[in-house]
Length: 320
Ligand code: NAP
Image 1 (cartoon, rainbow, N blue to C red):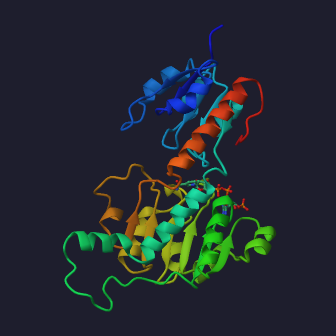
Image 2: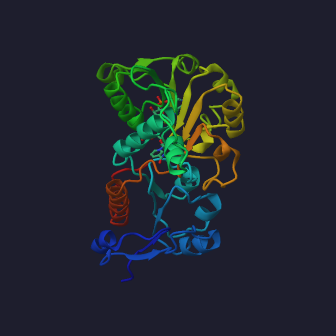
Image 3: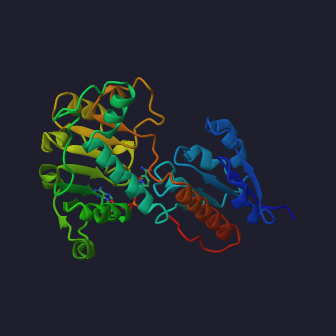
């Protein structure tokens, strides 16, 4: 009997896929530098039984419409805003993601980005490498304190809570906003629920960890930046779509807020000449929230487990 075909939009490490090779045929897009062209993907999806895709692949209605044999779309990410869930549902295709396994790693990156932005680490590193360090001086590259300040976490979910645990270690006052109050988190982590408005008013560090949905689209806009402190640092480790980037640029240029640390952007990869990358008070990263070797391996494994379960007629571990 013909083995089910699993299409993977990047090279899957063979040491991970080999355990499944007796049962499934893997077909991978092998170029690391360029994403699979849409036409190529469409062609493969017409015959594939399973798809393992990345956050950068847009799996839209039209692609799903032609995917006659597809049973599962396994996203190598916890966010799934790159997939048209309704189209998948209407065709009975299961969508899975990779929650939990990336939570701590993403929070590590979030906190690293917060520290790097507050303490101007990238500017300082560039300064020393460019031979500009002539003399010690009291306010040379002086940044903002992090310890004992107020952090405002927008999205107190898995990663939000992991950020809160890190903030506790820095003696920070922690406020949060969700659509619904999380009393268990309040008890466990000593965090305080506030309205979005109050969070923006109170926080020295505003951290976005919400999923990208029609509700969160552009939630950080000029109105939101105006409500923040002039000294506020904005950190985005969720999705670029939650920010109105034109408004953020204006806020950073005109001193409405102090600085921003961004792991995600509206258009990815962001172009080198993008105005955000010209601002000295921006620390920018290429969407590497969960990019540790250990965590990426665990994310692949979870995708493979989900694919194997669905192709064996069982329930996947982490359905969306
Ligand atoms: P999660 O556990 O589902 O947490 C999301 C939180 O956001 C929940 O507490 C939810 O609470 C809140 N939320 C949802 N919609 C909201 C709204 N309209 N207003 C206010 N709060 C809202 O998800 P997670 O695992 O922590 O991941 C969060 C997001 O991080 C993912 O969706 C993904 O986009 C992003 N992420 C990025 C990276 C990266 O590489 N930078 C890595 C991993 C994840 P309520 O339902 O009560 O509102």
